[in-house]
Every structure is written in structure tokens, then in C-alpha cells.
Length: 536
Image (cartoon, rainbow, N blue to C red; front, side, top):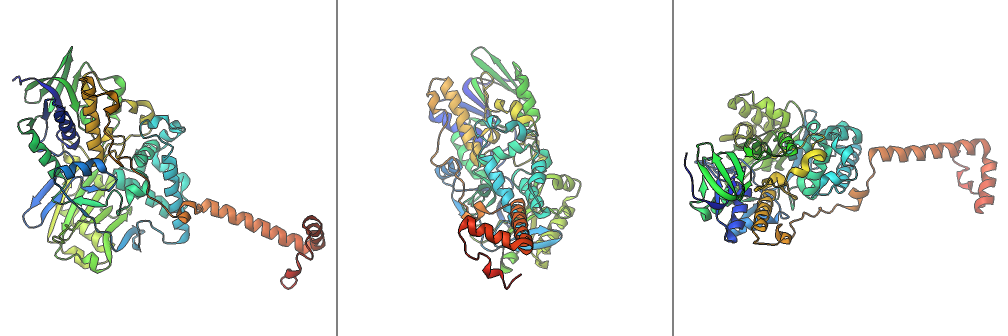
């Protein structure tokens, strides 16, 4: 066991959140040491280099124009972005058929479109009632937190297609089944990202762009600024606080002394550390009740982008339980080299895939693409890659941690609460863009601000760093989309019209003189039904 020299702050985790915290602290003259369990920096951003296919992001990769924290950091590091391809038809695979659409919302018939639209707008409207900073204070917090997303979908959807699309939406954004997550937590997550459209769409939304060369290089370039202050292969096992200092111990027995600690790792990993004094009972309960989502990310490379030749943009969505891949998106590089499709195996299907061999997962993935794009060319890749985030010891899943029913209202006020000299960061602690790279950056800067405030370097008003447009605005919708009726509303309106019409016809047929007299005296109409004499 060795003892290191003392530093002002020790940061646990060298992902975007931990490194962003280190950056802000260093800019204020505070000495830092970053301890990372893995043999690399970047956390949930991980870029591989392939000999024949160039670079690929096997972790977080997409960014939108509203995500100014990560975009600002990338710009400072000299990392550029390029637009994700969205030109062409979208595919929604349902009941064994590949349905083609000009946008991402399935509308095989008007009733399904109305049902999907109502479900989306209801989700949006309800999410606006959930405060992003304190979601447990929402007017209907108790009701919504004790309801699963699945229960809500069953209460609001009239058609199976809308129900399945809602399930697929949950798969796509948080990689769990809708019956596993609290409705309140889902509403908060949606609001923290600016609404359903902001999360789901490509252009001008969360999947608008990628980073040229991969997202991990942001962390790598940032880490270069801390040469000698980052220790890899150093999982933290103990954080012991005493009056005026804290002692951090790694698995290999090294000890490091500091004034403050920032823990910037996923919630369930925070619970693996031994704290002295112990975490509060509610904090520990919270960390135990925030599991990670389940996802295997695949990349399949081809000689030609056959999907583009057939008029598709490469974006598909499915909830068919016979299909392994739930989502796909075009992953061709900005220079049009290396045509590729990224596929996501998510939620329950990811658990099924865990029992398969890699060869079987590849075969099933290719079969999915062949059916989605109606092409045998999909069966002829030149290379296949996959990364199972559930196998990562220091991540345990992807994309983010979620809350089961009843957790948010009971425990989640603890998510950002300091524990003595220990502050907490990580994307899950972000106010906006939780679970995204942008949220990781803002959470790291906020945790650093808390330390700077305790060190009397900044005022309390400057703990949070507000970027221009960092609070996501909702994407505009047309008047018709905003005010289109639900299926239930349409049926109700049609029923009222039908009853009134039939009642009028009945009365007219059996007592037309009484109705004529009533309308003439009441409304001053002369022969009000004269136009009907040739009808009845």
C-alpha cells in the first residue's frame, strides 16, 4: 500500500463528466487527480479503430444543436461534427411487414396516425408539468410515479400499432421495457430533453450529428491537459472522510489524500464503493434502485449503401418480437467512405441476445436488415462489429440508469445531494439532457462548482454554468398536429353528431310540424326545412 501526495480534489471516473469537472477545477487553480477503473478514458464514449473500416463509435455518439455543453467542449478541443443522413424513407416494421414512411411517425391509416399523434402530444403535455430540477414536486407526482409507462400506454392508446410504437419509443430512448420504468421518471426524462420530438427526430434534434473521428477523442484530447494527473486501472473501493480531508483507496491498495471528492460514475457503481461515514439510508436505497438499461450496439459494413439505392435513409424501428434489432441508423462516415448500418439490440431482446453466440447475433442482424429494406444485399456484409455494454464491468449497461415505480418521489432528491466532502456527478445527475453526453458535461461542471463554492472560490450563484440555449426548447409542431383529435375524441364527436342527426330525422319524420313551428317561433325562420322536401 502506497500513499500519494495530497491534492485538492480527487475525481472518480475519467468519462466526460469527470474530465469536465477536472477541467473547470483546473481553470480555477485547483489541483486534481482523476482515478479511472478502466484502461482508457471516455466512460460511455468509446471509439474503436478498424483496419479496413476506419473509426467507429461503439458507445455514445449522437449530438443535437441544442446540446451546447458538449458542442462547446468539442469545439474547444478542435473536434468537428457532421450531419447524420436523414434523406429518404423511414421504415416501421410491424406485424411482419416493413411499412415505409416519409417521416419517423408511423401512420398506416388515419386512425393509427391520430392515435400515435395523441399519445405523443399527451406525453409532451404531461412532461411539461414535471419540473426538471425537482420532478418529485409535480402536481401529479405520486399518481404518475406509482404507474408504469406500460400502464399509461394501455390507458391512452386505442390501437395496437400506437401501443407498439409507444413501447418502441421507450426501447429506443432508455433501452428498458415500458413496464420496468416509472411514468413520472419517463416524463421527467422527456422534459429534460425538450420533448418527444427533440429526443426522437434526427434533423435539428438529438440524433442530428456525429463527431468527425468519433466522440471518445473529446475525452482523449481533454485528458492530454491532465498528463500525470490521471491514473488508469485504478478502481476506487473506499472513501473515508475525516475532519478537514478525505482518504481515497483504490483496489490495488494505493491511497490518496484530498480535501474533496467528486464521484462521476453511474449510480449503481457509486453503491459499490465503501463510504465512511456511510451514505444515508435513502441515498443507498436510491443507488440500488437505478438499474442501467440493456443494449448491444452493432455496426455492419457493406461495399455499397444498398438502402440508399432503394430510397431508404437507413432509419428503422420495430417492436416485432421475432426481430433482434430494434433500431437502425445510417452510420456512413462524413466522407461517404465505409457504408454502414448501426443496429441497436435493446431491452428484453438484448437479454435474449445474451444467450446467443456472436455468429448467431450477426446472422439474425443481417436477416433483420434484409426484411427491413427488402434486399438480399443486406446478407452480404464485408465486416460486422458489436459491443455489449451489459458485459462492461464499470458500466453495466447503456444508455442510462432509470427509476422503477415509486423511486423518484421517495429517494431521488438524493441524486445530487453531497455527502460531506463527497460530491456526485455523472450524466444521471444532470438537470437537462440526462443520459446524454451533454448531461455528462453539465453535471461535471456543476459538481466542480459545488467544490469551488466550498473552497470559497466562487459564489453560490455561480455553481451552475449556464450555456446559451443549454435548456432545450421544444421543436415546433403544426397547428393540425397540435390540435388533431384523439381516437376517443373522434369517436365521441362522431357519436354526438350521429345521435343529433338521427334524433332530428326521427322527430322530423314523426312531428315535422312541431319542429317547423318551434324553429319559426324560436329563430324567426320561414319554412326552415323546405330544402328537405325532396330528401325525406
